[in-house]
Length: 508
Image (tube, rainbow, N blue to C red; front, side):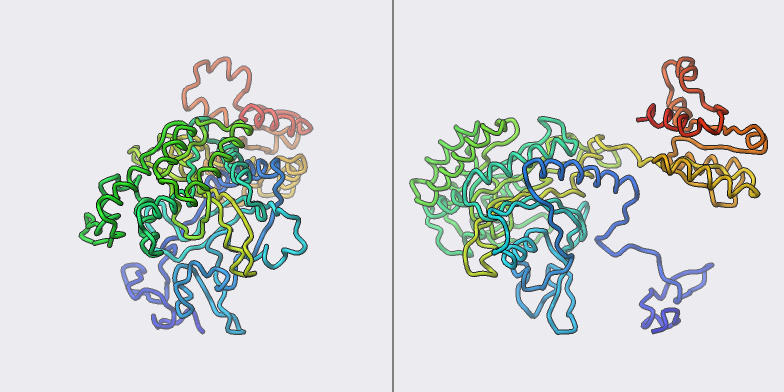
């Protein structure tokens, strides 16, 4: 196909594209696909820092790295697909030349389940792995809700012990701190699907669709409050836009019992006591209480107190495959948007026990538990809280002062690169002033200037751009700062690397 075709139906471009006030349908409009964003160095640096820090925590706990493909066969992601005739519902899918549907992974857990089922005989058991990378969701985008984002997961497959859940929770709490969240600025909220199932049994809820409706209603408690959830537990709720959501159909007494259950809470021990009374002696509910008691004991031994992890019966987790403990990481930092207005980020990660996922492939139940950080979301939250506001640093810029010396400038840049210092030679066509402005805009720590005088004397002139930026912000003692780090210095060529390192160290 000729992509320069002026026919809009062939080029796929909007017919109203403009050029000089005239319609030019052969020229595409520069735009990002809806729900996808471009990320520059600052955003990438923040996410990579989180991934390095969290991965280091996972490895200290003995988890091994695993990378699975971006694509999985669509039937491996079956819980997201309503039927085989709509393989693009919820995921981005395409048909291979053998007519099998493949889809971009929706999360990192379904690929793990497929990998575990495919390799179970050769894996150490339990199998402890962590993974990170982009995931894709074919859902309606919105503010802060993208169709592509980065996750970082850790999972234990093959252990049914509640202590496996506790270790994942402790690791998540430590990972948050490593990622840059201060102590006390995040909380892990823990619940159990067994408790919720016990509650529904004691409330007379037996129908599976009604159970799911109850779970979905409770999951909206922090957004809608008790009154909104009460409506969703009953006949339904009419929202501000006029849209009606059908409710779970519970009678008033059953709805109040569910709301009373979700309101239980204080310390971990007190919450367990209240929950035990609320579920009315249900066998599955009692098992859930015992699981949380074991998790509590393990968390205490791991040094995770109630200031970092609590039991919260309102936590549901929306995914339907959780079978036991469920947990969410909620950010408590005060955050603001670009206009300085308060914004609530809420959950930045979550997980739980999913003992039935591998069985989709093998027919045999394999216990598993895990946690997932929303890396992109956490990075955005930390930036909104002023915790990651620094721009990504640029390289040292070698000013192209004289075009006849370009080979010499490249030799200077190569010398710095060999010493581990990022460096570049300016390759534009602008003059000295514009080159300095370029270096400043790149947030370069320094610029290197070498003219005929420097070449003749065997010297280089180093401009400390960090100092210039600091002085422009108003340093309290300018004289002392200048004496310690002069803004511009001419040094022997042999001292170039040492001089640049001093600037980098001071800036760090």
